Length: 152
Image (cartoon, rainbow, N blue to C red):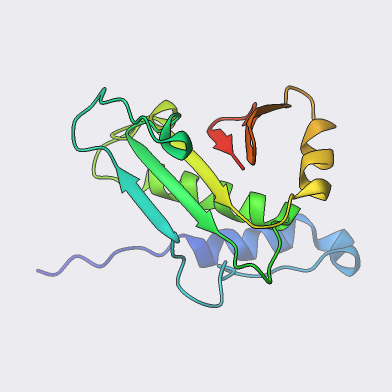
């Protein structure tokens, strides 16, 4: 006998519309909204082969076990939306494992590589509670705060 899986999302979607029935003119509902037009791809992922190995190259000094790198071409710039997009990639990467917390957030770094200094992003993050920017060396900045260690 074949067991059919009950689809709960359509029922919840309908229930949400019923719940907000008096205010439907103020709201727009989308069922199972697609997050991306194309597949989500990390530009470069670098995984340390042996836990605890120190990387001495300046751009890898902060590397932990799993290191996500977002590259912006010389014609492009690093925007606030890029920051949140790559933060989302890191969250998906951490969560898309066979076991819960198989990859711990503290084992992940995010690196942004760009030609132009991301002034708007730095100003934005500097104004966020709990964030501060550390100028490590020429062209290398650490963004401290949040759930992952960042560098730009």
